[in-house]
Image (tube, rainbow, N blue to C red):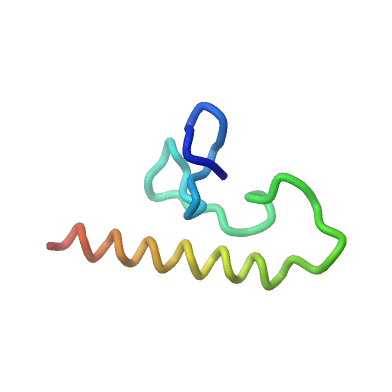
Length: 62
């Protein structure tokens, strides 16, 4: 995740820089593995991405 498409695939909302309607919110968005269960982290990332997608959809319909 990052701001620069040259150095990252996803933005801070786990949205692909190259494909606006592609969100990656499971394990592949993480750059390394964890020693603890990452389920809550994945749930939080998914909730944030979904909230952002809903906001963007609402703006598109204005």
